[in-house]
Image (cartoon, rainbow over all chains, first blue to last red; front, side, top):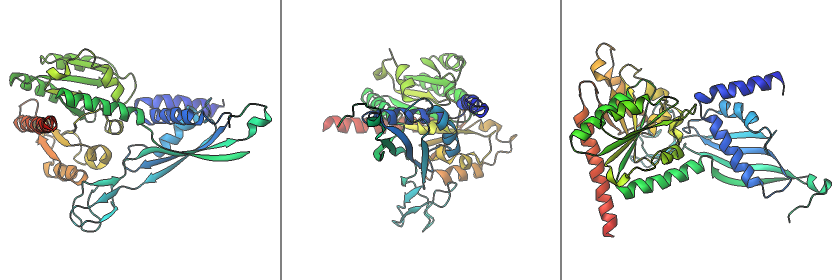
Length: 145
Length: 230
């Protein structure tokens, strides 16, 4: 591990006190490892997340810890792709559906009435992951059909 | 070499969410109203809870508390002095409580013998908002010594709250607290939310808070009874 890597680990553990992105990344590694286990010998190359704008996670922090948390796992070296979903509301007053314009004002973009009914924006999920298969045969391992 | 995309569509906090769902069922069937108290460090969650527990006990209610902190059991000792059972959860570096921690610390408690269980979260306005603890009500607290724009800065948490409590209103004047601005900001983030303006020191606003707790309990037991009838 290079100097930057060492510094990265230190920072990651230092920020543990203040952010939960590290434990979120840990959950991602666990879920993907479990699901990828059936593809014996495969390597995870990419993990795609869907994260709502109200999900209370910072994209940079997730990326920051991802490289370190995946080290020595099936996900090592994989890319983390994060799709941020806007907050979508349904207005009880005018019936409109749409994105709220600001996270500082939860009101209908059409009629301006306050809105409580949010239909999107709190997601925190793994959409899919990408694996590379095929090298297994070269190594002479048995592949499950 | 072939590339394959595996669809997962799975909540990242699935494990916590499942545990929280189980806890919520347990709380509902035991008939205990569970509240999750969230704020920045220093807002006065513990003082507000001390006063709440003490007054509830005086009025004959049965209440208990779980309190989360990174280290020390100071808060649990403070809360236990009220006469209510209180337990400390030390997270040792984790910035929020999780359903599993709550579940572990409930061992040996007779939930059916309680009217209220308060969970005081770790002082933090970001991380606790992602973690469901199985609570019925999430309460966001804000003190007059903090900025009136805090709800705007932390919309994720304030938008997820069911009720808001403004604490330390006995200090509003010396702090030049702009009450109107604070209320406007809270309601911009969470339209229609109930707001209680309180002082644990003088007892101001506590009567409204207790009325709200009683209302919540009444609403829940009505639901429970109608379920039993069915």
